[in-house]
Image 1 (cartoon, one colour):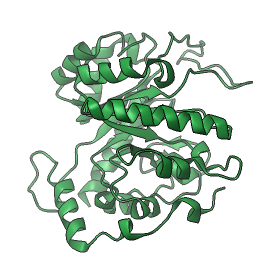
Image 2: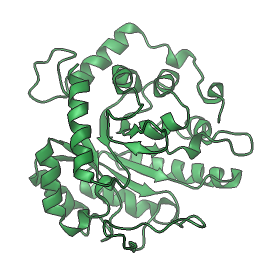
Image 3: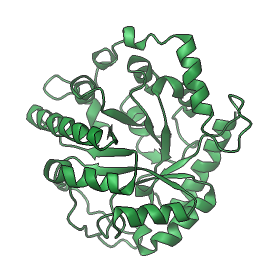
Length: 316
């Protein structure tokens, strides 16, 4: 477990004045459509990371998106598809489909390097227990400009690296180089590039904590998508991160950690203190958040529970 002080460096950048926080908070609450406009009453649009539906979304992409919108979700973040590309579509076509459902496409996940299943890993299976076969998945190391161009074609404001190799110091160094190059390309395209964490980022490699290296060695233009579940599982306090690096976390994954602290759970059913975290959204610089639940037994039941509980939290 990493020492918090290695990457939580409270300094001048963390000393946001109360006036600035107030302005950020007003901007945060003003996002909700149809709200009264009073701070504390507005509901920020709730988003969904489509990886939650990974095992079956490709069977009926339009139908499944309509179900997501029917629950109340307003924004989506796309991810990997068994059909390849953007659920078997070109970016512009997928963007049009999302718009037709009444939702907004805000972000897309990509790999940092070629994907390889870990040694001795169990195969990923579908709802019927059958192994899932993957099409070739592009990655930033080999296909960076193409992925950035496609994000621009789709009109999305964010591109996110879902994961990257970091088992050795050399892998971390190579990953930082790839991420910085991608950040430059995204900036030219008018896209904000972000990095998404799991738990590995908070485990020391050769005496260094990868997440600390990312925060300090990546360009300040590169932001973070903080996965609240995995950060909590790693023993990291999201609010402390926000205070140490204000404005660096425009995207979140709203995912709970089960009470056994072994894996994901629907929002409001585990140990993550969402109320306290959302109370510090302005400090984080949060712009969008996406519900996610990795391989749930019943995806629509899970995202319905998460949506209902988030609505209560944001209404409090």
